[in-house]
Image (cartoon, rainbow over all chains, first blue to last red; front, side):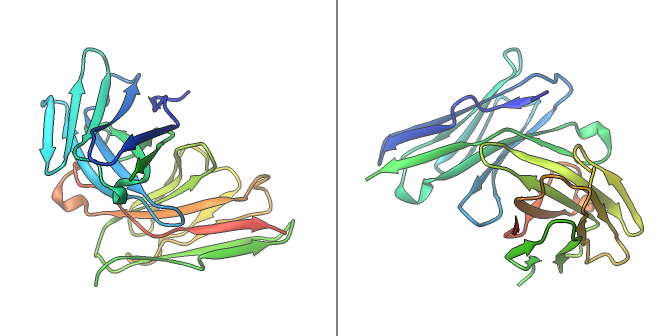
Length: 114
Length: 115
């Protein structure tokens, strides 16, 4: 049962344009969401997060939007740069579960075209 | 620099052998985690430990074992009972003292292959 879904396995975007990565979840108990970026043969690195009490969080070129009623979140990268080419994972957490267990999506491979 | 070290980066195992993957952190984090990544799939939790001498099964613990004798170390043993061990294994840690909403920090992974 995939509780966190990233339905687009891959995405190609022109350099300088906006990249939008999507993530859907099914468990309404999730109340904290994170995005990780991963290069090949390396561990994921944390990018940005959002609590369910917010609908937007911004950090430089990265903005995460959360639509709780639709159980949907998205990561916007603008402007996209070649170094953004990587696999992006969204992850979800139940903060009252006491063990900080993250549930990950399957990832979206973003390719920035120069 | 503080961080998480996984070793070796590449590991080969013969059928029927147990093999242990190392994970060491000098971040003074209480919680540590082991994940497995397969092609086209997300990270799946194998085991996690929130404190020394305690650990819990994750979603896919069968065929794996762990120990947590020291705060900085959380080795994972892939046993012969794990029927499909070829994967990329990632270790992570978390500073629980700063609250639940802190990101997990990951090592660079170990790629395990069956000979």
